[in-house]
Length: 148
Image 1 (cartoon, helix red, strand yellow):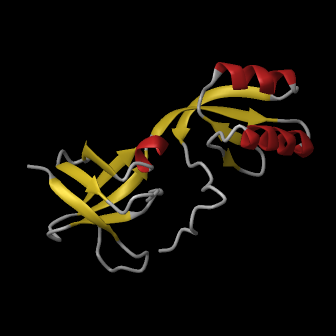
Image 2 (cartoon, helix red, strand yellow):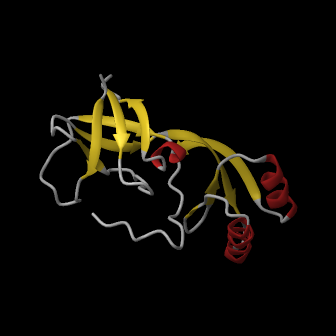
């Protein structure tokens, strides 16, 4: 029988994780589904709808028997870079108009592989590579701030 995980812990909670759960970006955005923790425990997420888990978040079992730390699982992503920062900003604008989940850093954009988007970015003169790494897309503009 899976352990029911129902409570996202506050950042300042003194409860230490007793297991870990490595999830892709898409899996971290689903609040109700079964998983197996990195330690082999069957769990079922039953969190508040709309919950988006981030690296380092901790969730607790309904019966308080388990505290699980969330890890961002490496996955294949496209890394976009540009010679000039304005080119990268313009690419972020165009990807945002397409509602593409996007991780933005000072020097790169990260997004899930997509042949059409790759072609668009290459036509704009950007460099696109594929790598395996944790993917942490930006929260949406209307998503509530991430409070711990």
